[in-house]
Amino acid sequence: MAKFQLIVSDPKSKTSKAASLEGTKAQALVGKSIGEEVDGKLLGLGNVKLRITGGTDKDGVPMRFDIQGAARKRALLSAGVGYRPSDDGERRRKLIRGRVISEETLQINSVIVSGAEAVAEVVKS
Image 1: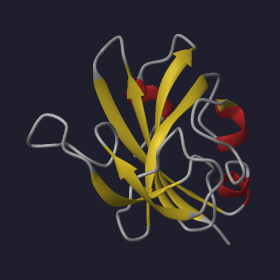
Image 2: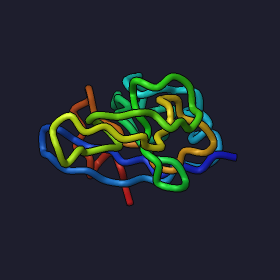
Image 3: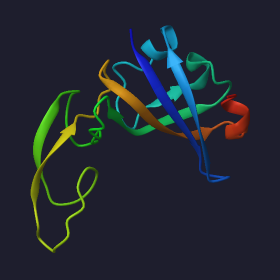
């Protein structure tokens, strides 16, 4: 059974809160990918729409939007999520995970797209 840490960010107030999802609420996110919008009611977070922006797996490996599927891959990166080069033109092979949320995912980052509620009202600790 999936268990996720959902980070909800509010671009208006520039704040974020964490919520823990288990059971059927967590299963609603399995199979979704980065960039998809999810209804907050499915997750028990009220009347908001959330856009998935990224995440990490159980070992801290980041998800990357341009990699298909949910598997881990050692990709050759020059910049972006998962790698910051120290010199111009530098490329390295780094371990990253695909854009699809799976049972292996631990943390999911999201942004409030629509809904007038603030983050503090959406995520009740």
